[in-house]
Image (cartoon, rainbow, N blue to C red):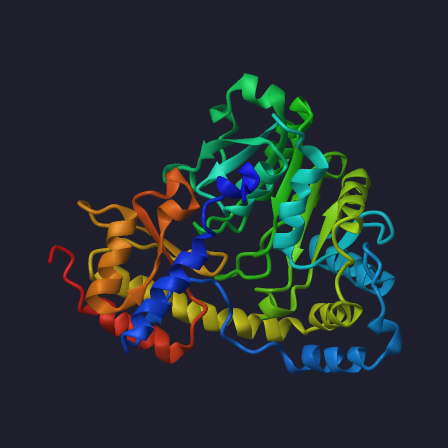
Length: 388
């Protein structure tokens, strides 16, 4: 049996390897503390679960949903954009529901990329940007994110001949894996750049609502001219502890949204309407709930950063997202240092090279594990001897 080249060439998804490493340790009877995967440990809020229960009782929700999503869901997303970002969207043409942002991000390439086309992606980055492009038959040109530039794309680093050929450009702020944040002026620059070269600008905005220290993340759709060229992907997974319910949405230029709708309507049958009602309830959560949820992560962030610095791993507290991205000590590769933590203190972290060559020399720690496990993991890390 011969499989398609896209499958033969497909690397294992990053977190599959991490899950297997954890399982191997547990099979030996070893208790592992994992800072590996960004999956919130806190429960989906009760009002959101109540909406699912009520929605599941409605016979109309037992049928196929529409690909673009319930009108009520899209109207609530439009209200979110107006209230949160001051951006007015037409729910009928400029918003579509997603089965989680990951699904929409992967399918977006099918809207723009033909075999041989080029997509521009940051490095390091969420691997799905590259994988979606590969599934569509395209290739990815990587732009290195540099620590001394705040992990913002420097558009001058993109060769002009690449820009002229590129069909899409991915950005992601607050950023996974680095935790970097971007000012609105950066989005203005990104929009202007993409309009100059007629490139579709795609913004993964999964972490705009997970921020700290008074920082408020902008939307790319706030940038001047963004609605001419941009589409933004949101998820309620991290915002409202809903990773398992797969509720997301894309918003922006109506032609781009329509293209994604046409692709999705031929591949999936849309998100369950009961889950969309959960999404409405999640968007209705009071700001105090979100503040309290983020405060839990802030406290964890500060504890993790403090211990890492104590053991000689220089870490800086990010203002957004759920991760600590930090350089590793000299003398190790990212994979070697991650393996050392697993071998020496039974702690799992994500090696930075899993996010691309630009992640080599770094590790990522997620803040999405219970406080008692955070404390135990930090106790173990404090015992680490770097040069041992």
